[in-house]
Length: 84
Image 1 (cartoon, rainbow, N blue to C red):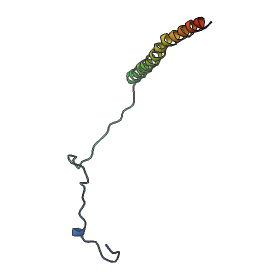
Image 2: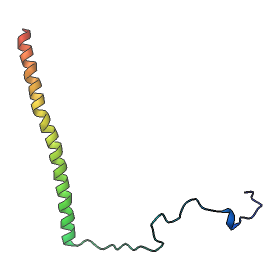
Image 3: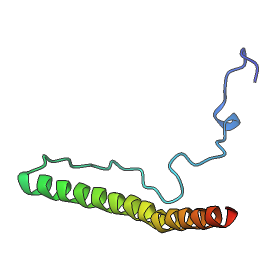
Image 4: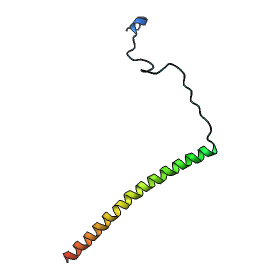
């Protein structure tokens, strides 16, 4: 469209819907409240459980390699004895 030509309403047809497929054109409210002592304790408990779960997963992965490394050390010692 040249800049000197005014835009007509019939020239502009959007190829997309501005509000999505099933979304209504209305205002949504989000309510935010302060965290009380019970909510704070519950949030702390959730974080503590997550931290313990991550720690146990890492500890399990480390403890899984302990027998493998011990086996490699024993095999290396046996090969060293046979080499002499």
